[in-house]
Amino acid sequence: MPLGRWRRRRLIPPPVRELLAHLVRAGHQAYLVGGCVRDIVRGLDPQDWDVTTSATPDEVLRMFPRVIPTGLRYGTVTVMLSGLAVEVTTFRSEAGYGDYRHPDHVSFVGDLPTDLARRDFTVNAMAMDAAGRLHDPFGGRRDLRRRLIRAVGDPRQRFTEDGLRLLRAVRLAAELGFELEAATRRALREQAGLLEHVAAERIGPELLRTLLAGHAGTGLRLMFETGLLGRIIPEIAAGASEPPSWEHLVATVERCPPDRELRLAALLHHNAGETEAILRRLRLGRPVVERVGRLVRHHREVRLEPPMQEVELRRLAARVGRDCLGPLCLLRAADLAASGAAVKAALAGSLERVGRVLAADPALTVEELAVDGHDVQRVTGLRPGRAVGRILARLLDAVLAEPSLNRRDRLEELARRLAAEPKDD
Image (cartoon, rainbow, N blue to C red; front, top):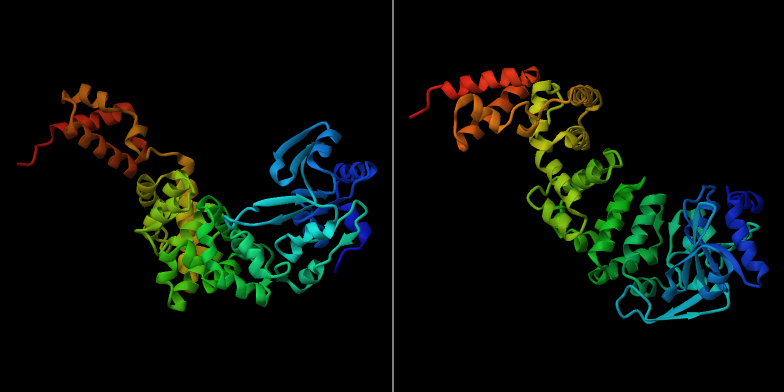
């Protein structure tokens, strides 16, 4: 049920209302705009605040004591007040999009409707004044009720202006659980090639936000059906021509907790040999590439039923790292559940054992042993070289089997015995 004006007003924090009122007292128009208005209309508390105004950036800079000139070229400054950062942008119109991402020309204008007309989707093209009065020339509130993502005006023109809007449409649908309006969906499919003009540094974050959304499956299906996925990750699209394979991927993602690396691994778990190359292409950063790669490579090594013994879990953790042990169980459970297996009880038992293993903080690497190569040389008389390395590896294997062995005296004694063993011919 739509909120009334006074209930909408109460969702605007006093500092933001005062910012709007200050601009109006100075003779300017000023409105909340974009996602914060969309949230307020839905009865939610916004996390970010955006204001559109007839005041120029220079006027805003003079009016408030703490202002950061974050985007003067596009008429945007950020006003800092009472712990909030509010983006304030002058009413503007745009023309020419030579790079399919940014306007070639920005003109400041004096009226709100012109400013709203340049925005991407109707649910983002609503404005609200400090009293909670809504300005909705493109039917955004109606589309919220109908649970639709609809482009403002001609969707082909909106997407040509900014190719990233193709992914934003899908991400919004995934976050809100909405459908794409028919003409918007058709234009998205027809213009999927515009993604070639969008930098990977912008594509990657939109993909991640879609994967982490409350309706990630909705977003992924839209990406597949409209051809966007084939532009971003053709390796998946090429291998998902059979519906069961694709639906299994989607179901695996949906069954994973909303963790960045875990859901990326779920999406890519059929592409073990290509995972790291895909993630590097999306510029997602070395830590993400490395961790997701480990999850994809090793998830099939997890056994949930019967649960793995603690010694097996320690050996697995030694191969993949402590940080991946629990996520590997979650990924394997999601993979099996997507195939129809009942895994809830088995997963709970496995995670309990993982918790015990990690709480004991066992040595999992040679570096974590109570002795090092110098100690081995001292007690065995061996010279530096492969023989010392082999003994350290066997010491670690023994400690993985029995963590209580990880004491200097016991490991030095074991090293002596290992060094004294007859050598194979």
